[in-house]
Image (tube, rainbow, N blue to C red; front, side, top):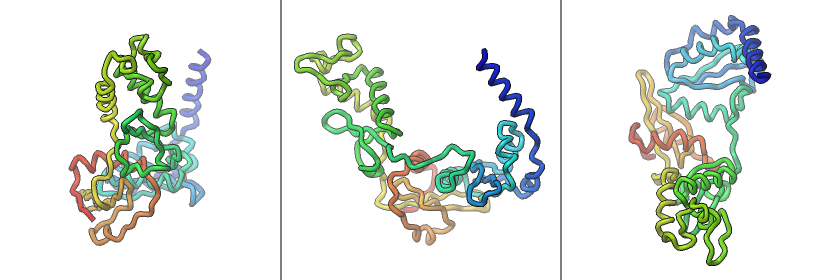
Length: 286
C-alpha cells in the first residue's frame, strides 16, 4: 500500500509541475512529416538531452510536448534539430549511431559491451565465446547474442528444461562415470547420460532448439548498399559485416566509404539482419 501511494504521489507531482514548453514552440514550424532523427538540445552544445527517431518527425516531436512524464527534459531543452532520412531503416541506423557517439542525457545509453558473448556449438558441449576474441560476423555455429556469460548459461538452462536436455552433456554439470545426471532421476532429462536415449538424438534436439537463435554470418564478400527511397529522397546505406558505414546519395559515394575495424556491432546486427536477408530492399554489392 505504501509503494502504491508513493507511485500515485510521483504521478501527481509530474503532472502538477508540467507546463507546455512554449519556449520550444518555434521549433515546430519547420518540422517535416517525414522519417528521420531528432535531437532535443539543452544549454550544452556537446551533450544533447535526448535523441529519437520516427517515421514522422513532426508527429513524434509534438507527442513529446504533450507528455507530462518528460517535463524535466522539456524544461531543460532550448532547441530541437532534426535530420530527415529516406525511411525507417535509415532512421534506426542513424539514431543508434548518434546515441552511441553523443551519449544524450535522457536516453538509455548504448555502450559497447565488452562482455558480449554467444554460444558456439562444435563436437562437444556448447561453449560460451566472446566477441572480443572472435569476429561474430564471420564465425560459424554461433547461437544467440548475450550481454554476459550468466545470461548465455541461463538461456542454455531454459532450453534444457524445454527439450529435456542433459545438463551433463551441455557442460552445466559434471557427470560421474556410469551414472546419469541429477535431472535424469527427476525425469527432467531424457536420459542421454544414462543410455535411455542416444547422444545423437540429444544433440539433434539441441541443434534444433539452437537453430532459432543462429547468428548469421555476413553472406557477402565485402560491403553492400541498401537502397531506401521515398518521394524526394533516396539513400544508400552502406553496410559491411553488419556494421553501418554511413548513408549517401549515390553509388560513387558509397564506394568511397571505408570500414574502421571496430568489432562486432550488436545493435547494427539487430537492426539490419532481417531487412538485409528478407529482400525487402534493393541491394548493391560494392
